[in-house]
Amino acid sequence: KELFSPTHACDDALDAVRELLDAPSTRDVVIVASWLNFATELKDASARRSMATFIRSFSTRKKVFIVLNIPTGNELAPTSMFVGSRTGQIQLKPLESVRFDRKAFDLRMQPVRTALVQIASDGGAALIDPVEQLCGPNFCPVFSANGTPLYLDGGHLTRTYSKQAAQYIDPTLEPTAT
Image (cartoon, rainbow, N blue to C red; front, side, top):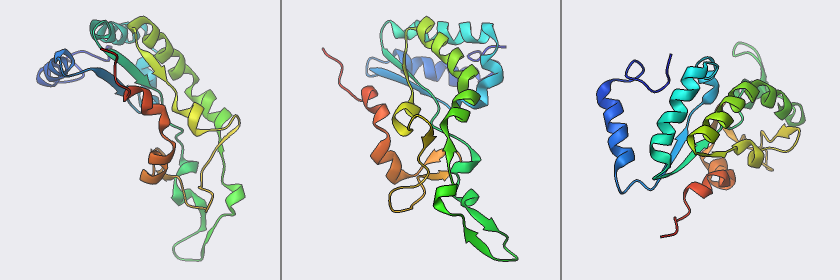
């Protein structure tokens, strides 16, 4: 099973992607996904080779970045920060009890990360790990200093937090020397 083949996308869409990749105005290519959703495919060696080959087909002409997952998990969703029910009393959990365990996330992400490191290396892409900037060594912040949730749900940063903390994407925006 291949990640990049007409069986996974219609021919027209794949042709449009190739056309965009070949366009002289396309300077950099940033590949972002919720990679944990592709864990099964990334276990397949032929799928990894196919993805690396696809990336290699344009990485000699373009700067290519693969961005790993941001921290994701139900404990990041504001809805998980309450106890009670809609028919009873709903209360906010104590802020100090709401935590995101980075080490557990790293363990969950490890097989996907290993596959993407190999794909990036084989395909000639740079790897960007948002977790390095968004988290400390043991935990990832869930709230701002004033107690505002930093995530919209279990997998999306709020607009404010994204603007403040997503410097990991900056290398993709830096001008290329001409």
